[in-house]
Image (cartoon, rainbow, N blue to C red; front, top):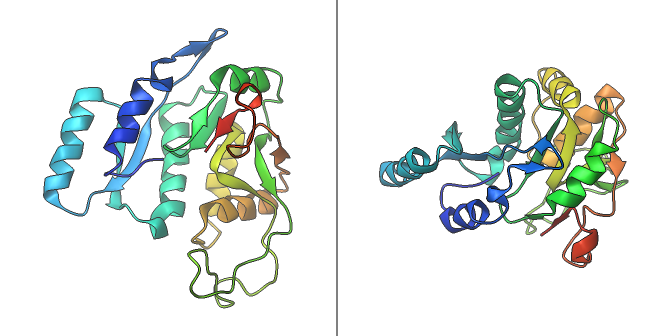
Length: 213
């Protein structure tokens, strides 16, 4: 997941983990997803970047925090449409470090169906403070707990889960927090997410990490 303005992050990724195309015989494909820039001038800049690297998918709506859930669903749709034979789909923000050796090691021993893994939150409560960035009104979420969900910074799912989430989402009202929304669909599908300590914050030792913010 990227935004039109994070050019430096994309450049850093291309020159670091973006150079990794295969680990232990498993092919890795990395693509940036971004919404539309706010001005035509910025769109032309983004288009030049795409023409140069051919690794950006620009979705046809304004790139904003409020559209992150929609962007995530478009990402899943793109993945299952244009990469139908992949085993796993990873959603990861562009400010996140990935240890591909550890990630591939994890997935090579993981189940290939009904599997989604990341940093799992259980019994999280919505924030009712109106001044907080993650404020949630009782109108938008009237109950006192969110469903079990995985941190949106990075998570991996088997491709069948991606397809199932897309089908479930057709009947599920959008919710502003994409990680909670994915969790809501997992609950609807009776799919239990798997917690893994490698999906954690900067406090995790590098050699044990799958991702780090």
